Image: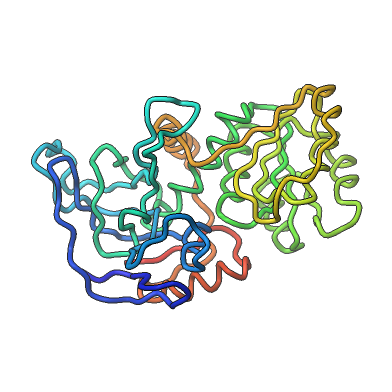
Length: 331
């Protein structure tokens, strides 16, 4: 089969022939129709991710058709159109992942290939209103933001929500999930064009975080936030305490802008704030995300589609953070 392979640090991805995976009894072989990029894939290609091994086939997100099944897998899965939950071995605790937790695409070979093998338990039926590219865009970013917004942030109808750094896959999904739940949503971005795109999708307003008074502007527009979803951290994180309403929840994943700066703990305890870390999501979170997509017929935002052979071009675009929505590969 053809696959995109990372052969060494700081070298371009290579499109080449590799062996088709062989199955264990509880595994299936999915013929990939489309795969999507995540920031994780970029960091791996840049050599800035834990546990990198070479060679590797990256890719956590994928949609496709079950082409082959292991001996112990229900035969009803054969020829089904599916998406794949990339979070494996979550464990028995809803609040946190197992020590054996892994993400598809490292250490196990991922979806940037014509075929991928996974255990049957990680299969979910593809939402019928989505095409292959839209379905492939869902899994990792959709799951991460679903857990952040609802499981950790406890967002509900009528809440006021802030999403920082709108534009990438997680930001656009968080916006779509919050709007579907009946929340009033505000955004920040370094790009006026991305703010305008978010407003066209339903955001009430947005501000440029490069402005010196961005937090004051947001406070004026919104009156404060019940839930804040952040994936940047950095010096701006301190201002999120002031923007939170009493009892507010600040949920974060990632840290592209640096570490958390010194915070005034008095604001946190006096306002009864919660600062919550999250990553990926449990099987229940994944099911909840798929159910939300099906109920509201949500269509993921796709910025650009590339042929699988041009995966390196997609990685290069992600490095520049110029996209609005997901970058997808067709197979």
